[in-house]
Length: 246
Image (cartoon, rainbow, N blue to C red; front, side):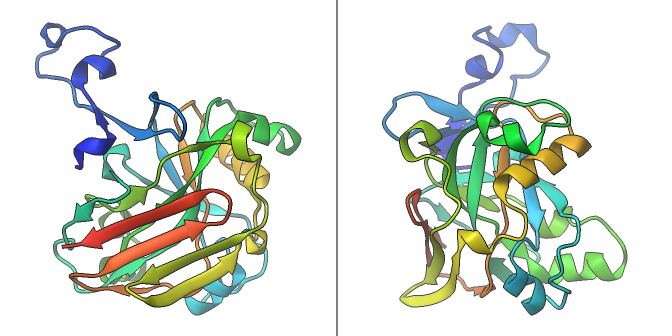
């Protein structure tokens, strides 16, 4: 994992030394915060599946407003902006998915929609990288998606931008280029389930916590990533992310 997103083990242990543990505690994944020398610690990563109608259609599903569904990635799958990542193992079909990422400063259970945005610290631009062939095999066999979704380096993410600085974006361009080719081009207002609804629904399934990241879904245009590709994504008013595939 890129060193830019990891805090040392003493920080993970609340400032204590490693002698309290039988092995050194793992580093705490964290993201830089725009305009600050402090960092945003990552607790869990939740991802929303098929949250743009056009993407649902291109994946062969009905775009009707069915209840949202979720999957998870591990916090240490995050890699920072500007990093070079290896092409994933055991796959020949890696796909890119650019997403608005929601960073929570407060958690809880059964959060009302009308209060959901008060739990948001800020926003970022993320990439949900997917081993599509392995995900497809898991779907056919009725198995979990982790091998297709939660592999190493699968959750690139930009710096976090405080909502206090930019507000809560509900519309604006979201796009991704591979090399000089624009692959994904959408608008945040095309989300089937908006950010407050996603938070409210998710909090009915899990107890959310400060430090949680929510990857809020991707627009149409997902496609294959090849070795040597440069991925450049952006969300208007939030920021940009660039990743090089080795």
